[in-house]
Image (cartoon, rainbow, N blue to C red):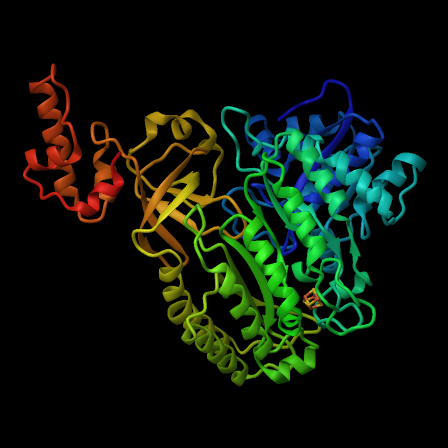
Length: 591
Ligand code: SF4
């Protein structure tokens, strides 16, 4: 962690995590960048630190060092974005306890600004810290900071359109990017993925889904394609490669026509094409993914939506997902909650995306598929709701349509009704067993090659500080006993496990060898038969522990005997010399 000698502002990235605002590494969120953009514009010195770096600092140096560090800052600005931090592979959002500790350790006179959804959520739950010069932002944290820097006063503020552009563009090459631990360098590129805010609000702002906060933002405000392209250009200059277009409640209604007059505004294929092609023209762009789709808009305007879908398939990287918020297939729930789309519209939209998006791209993934979101706990729900949901999923699958992911979320508290846990659990397990399982096998069939898997953890699904040390990142660990977990870069990647160690923060290609509940297993291709380890051999289907041991022993014997002539010429020759039947299916794993 960078430490400053003279006092500067400390920008603490506590990570945001909303469906339309990814910010947990490898993502860098846009709100934290806007905060840095404000400081850049004001020419104020600051350090950018992620909450994971802060935790490491405390682990290594101790709480006293953290207090000393905090007593040497001119101010603290933090985005805390996940009310209940869930399980993440690569980083964990700041918790309420950590936020409290930081506030407690901070000297009284130091200004402190905290913003993001977690702050609002914790306040609603009764959190009310008393401290002078502490401000909890409920509007735009960046605008609030800017106002404070100018006036010395804390006040809830909103950014103007000009400020939005200014801070987005200066945030693009700020320390939130250049000092982000996932950026990597020229030699070893990191998986950093740059989340861009394309617009704010939802076209259903007059009568939106009752549980949703987006309609409260009023009429949608779009950023122009040129503004976004310029921001991403600056991010590329700073070393960014991968981008996700976030902040879109619906990709299809970006700059749509008739937003104020029509219930179903008409998608406008031109600006989204200008944005996507404009971004693709920059050769520095790696993975490009997008955000949500609104199935009712797609279904009501199939012609324009087809054009947009074709553009998405042409310009996005494979593995792209359009999340569709159905929430419930029950007409009663639909009615009671002013939901967005019905089952008929949903199927029509899913058919369109499948028609153009199900072909595979260069990384081995379907190009573009819909994801589907259900919510349990909405008013009007009954046991029949879950049957209707399940029937709809079976109908979709019986038509042979693909879904990339099905997300089932429970909501509780004020404005929602109690969930009959038995019904909910049985729905969830039915979906997992009868829908998700077969889907996973179809999306990632045995033998399929998946490219550019980025390896992130060993022996567990959470990245630890130790994983960044030589023992886990150097090529010497390749093939050793243990499990490696990795993902391809992009939105909602499948978790891939390999039954031996692969140097972390490297990338390689695998062949799918098995399926778990929500993950897959694989083995790398291009294994070198002169150095492949026993554990690597064992991971190949059809080679058990005993055979792998025999092969490795025979190879060692052969090298001892014929040190001059070296190892076997080919894996096949090696297998034959060991009396192990060569199977042509093995060939794919070797160089
Ligand atoms: S369509 Fe989506 S963004 Fe709009 S109100 Fe409904 S849930 Fe919210």
